[in-house]
Image 1: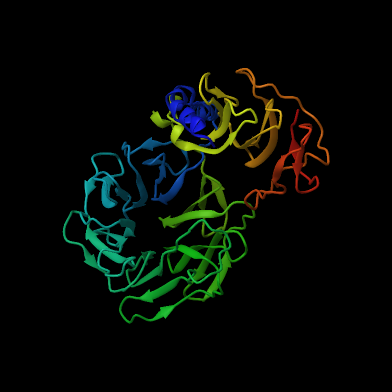
Image 2: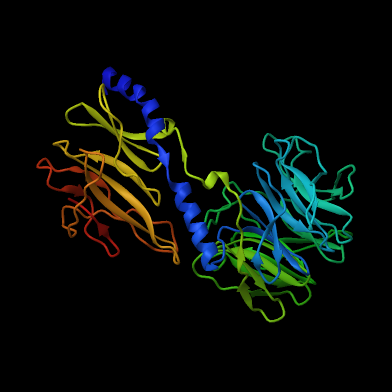
Length: 461
C-alpha cells in the first residue's frame, strides 16, 4: 500500500467517527421492547441461585431477583462495572456476590430485599464467591491470594458476613465448590481451566469432582473418565454438577450414600453453563434461560423471567470505529480502499471524497471485503440470525456496487463458480465450507474452493 493511501486512511479517521454509527444497540433495544411487549422471557440470564421464595441471577453486569414462579425481575445492583456470582444465604435474607466497585473483584453482600452492598474483602487478588457456610455466618470464596506461583492456584477461604478477617480452609487447592448442608463435607473442583467454554475438551485440565470429609479428609469421587465436570452443589446427600460426558454439558447427580450416578437433564443442543442449589431445588442456566429442576420428580422447567431497565450501552450512539479497521484492500484504480470495521464494510478515498458505509446493518456482521477486478463491486460475507428460536446463523456471500451511498444487490442461484457458505448446525460452531479465493479476471464470478453444500445461501450480482 502506497504512502499516499496510508495518509488517506489516516485522514479519514475523523470521518469514520461520524459514519460509524453502530445500530446494534438500537436493534437490541428494539428486540428487548418487543420481547417485553409479547411477554417473551429475557435471554442471557447468568449464574442463577435459589432460595425458598426467590431466584437471583446476573444479567447486564448486575444482580437481579425475581419470584420463584418468575415474572418481572427487580435489579438489586446498579453499577457500571461488573457484579457476578450471586449466592443466597441459607435463610434467603442475604445475597453474596463478586463485585468490581473498587476496581477489583471482591466479596460483597446485599440484603435480598435491596439496599447498599457491604464489602467484605479488600485484597488486591481476585475473590470469587462460591457460597455460604451452612450456618449462614460466613461467605465462602475462592482466591489465589496466598500462592507464590507465577500463576496463582486458588483455594477456598471464608469471611464473616458481618465483616472480619478472612480464614483459609484446609484444602490446599480448590476452585469451585460448596459445603454440604451438615457442614461435614465439601464437594469441589480442584483446578481452574484456561477456556471454560471449550466444548468436549478432553485434556489434562479436566479433573473429577472431589468430595472430601472435612474431619478425616477421606476423598470420594463420582465415576469419571476424562469429561469436564464443574459447579458441584448439594441437595441433601446428593451432589449435582455439570458434566459434558455425553457430548453436551448436562446436569448429573451423584448420591453419596448409594454411590449411584444419574443424568438429570438430557439437552442435546446448548450446554448447561452454571448451576446452584437451595431450599431443595436446583437452578441452572441453559440456552440463555434459567431452569428449575425438582430433584424429587426429576422434572425441570424454564422460569419465565423478564428483566427490563435503562441500559445505556443498548442505546444507538456514535462510535469511533477507526481503531477496528481490518481486512483492508486497495481498489484496482488505487483511488479507494475497502475495509471492515466492527461488522460494517466501508470504502474510503485515498485523497478526496467521502467515506461510504456500504452495509448500514445492525442485525448482521459483514466480514472479509474484496474488490472485483473492474472496481465496480465489493464482495463480503454477511452473517445474520434468521431463526432466533433455534439460534441458527446464516452466512451469505453478498456483492455490492461500490458507487453511491445505497447498496444495490441482485440475487442469483448458486453456481459452480459461486459456492461459498457455512454449515448451520446448532450443535457446533458454524464451520467454513468454502473459502473465497478471489474474483475471476472477467469479474463475472467468484472463485471458491468447494462445491455447493446443503444449507448454502448465496446472493450475488
